[in-house]
Amino acid sequence: METSSFVCGIMVALVFALLRYIEYKFIQKEPILLKKIVQESLMVYLSYIMGHFIYGQVIDPLNKLSGSPNVFTTEPDF
Image (cartoon, rainbow, N blue to C red):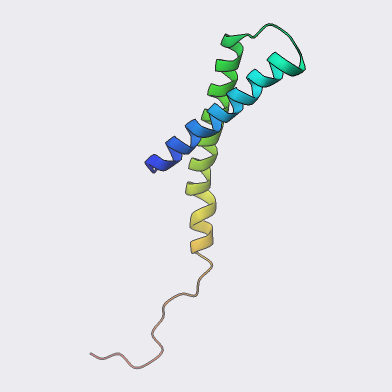
């Protein structure tokens, strides 16, 4: 896996945590549960990393297989 996927996962988790904080603070007007926000952000981060890993292991190789195979159609040179 590339380092950029980890950084991107962290960015996604931080945006999620910020939106969850805004939801608790201004929309629901409930006390902010930092432990719950951290747990949910960690789940979002791990979900992103696992999704990126599964995509790289399953979907990406399938897309590479769709090309035409290299075959020789002439007489061999030997």
